Length: 130
Image (spheres, rainbow, N blue to C red):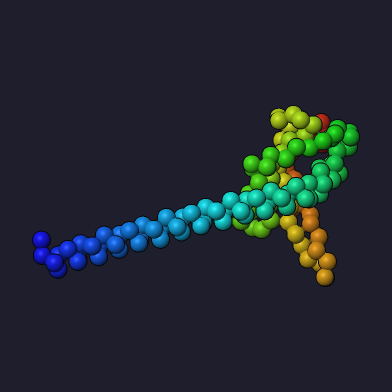
């Protein structure tokens, strides 16, 4: 084989390896970054667990809620802002709620609030709703 052809083939092989390495490295970086963001969101939800529980208990006319369990695998970023979570009440996985938490700045103070709680019709009945 001619020397020029070998140089061209080695150059092409090197380019393919470099491009593959860049793509693989970029994918690894993005996957790791996504995992880190997920861990941060879960830690945030754990920190403000009480905010969700308090909001649910406000609509509990029958004092039915003893505890809430948040499904941390359901934690995800809301495209409109904040974090969405799913969970259930009193250890019963059929009594499902959906909620979101968001951080607001009012004046110079930061507040964390739910941006709404959705509940199943069965749970609504047990809480004393219509």
